[in-house]
Length: 334
Image (cartoon, rainbow, N blue to C red; front, side, top):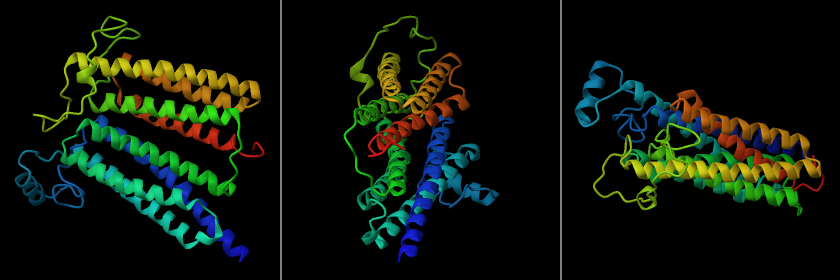
């Protein structure tokens, strides 16, 4: 029985680790797809112009263009979208396998079942958001929700992995743990602002730094910047908001970055004080990298590699804080 229990736990451990790597890849692919304006590369879902892959043969291309005359096939945009879908679909199957493994071994208490089932539910909802992203023409609130869903999925997979590794450790009261959890909430909100900035094509509306269009506090329009109204708009590719609204979104993301940085510097200082020096150095490195990437996006007009890396390091920052919350909750610091 012990050997079987060890084997089943090892399987869950490996599946969750693979799922983390795959989810991280999906997040990066989603960012890439969004940044190269390929979110509508395939105008239907889950296929592409009615096919399971991007149409390639002349008769397939002809059929695709006839079926979707409003969206002529552009293979260079369709492929990033479909590759993203392939990886996301594979992740869905892997999360389903994790939930099934947990159910089969539920009496052994080797992995948190509620978390496993929640992940499966989130993945299903993510699929719906992926479909709505296409069918609703890149509606910003859906695009942002889809991005946040990817970050949530990856972070929860990490939490699942850590709990399997440490066999559901007791969460002890710890000041660092409380601060880390607050940090998770702050960083998540900042990521949401970043998602809203990206979904509304406001990333380069301010080409200067630290000013925005020549002013530290430019003209702002909050009512238009954070509206989710869809009246009169069928396709949001390229954005639909005016200058002041986009400036407001961008400026708020910068303000959020300032608040996030201030809080994380406070957390890093506290970590040094209580003896978490190595983790504090790691968090400092991730934070500095993220700030550098964000400023580079502005100064160099959103280079593709930098913009994708900005998404990747954002999720690393969130995962680092989730990891800190986990380890600072162990009875014995590991």
